[in-house]
Amino acid sequence: MAVVYLARDRELERPVALKLLAENLAGDGDFRKRFVREARLAARLSHPNVVQVYDAGEDDGRPFIVMEYVPGETLAHLLARRRKLPPSEAAALARQAALGLQHAHDAGLV
Image (cartoon, rainbow, N blue to C red; front, side, top):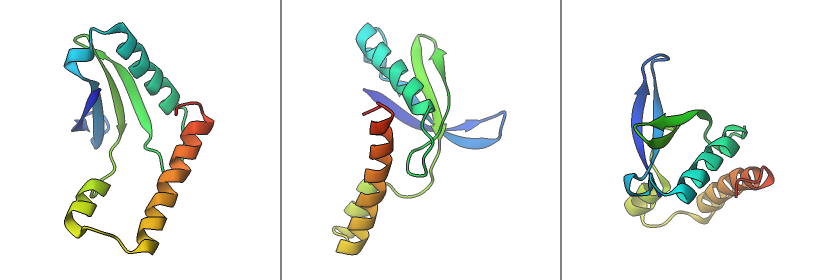
């Protein structure tokens, strides 16, 4: 549905995550509406386990969302590298994700 790039905010001189609606979906009104709705709802969230939305808009017909960049390893890369996690570490990561999802759910995003 979308692609995410590591970008740089030139004005504030900081890295950001730039989420663009997939090019093949940019012309689909339903996907565009969902993407814009996601940006609006996500911008209202403020939680330590949810990335912050800085901006949203459209460039050359493609909607975008500018979000907080969180450096580090993704869970997918961590699991590929380590194969499995100790139960306590897996539980701690799951708890963090669940708290962020609960906050997003409470706001009507998921």
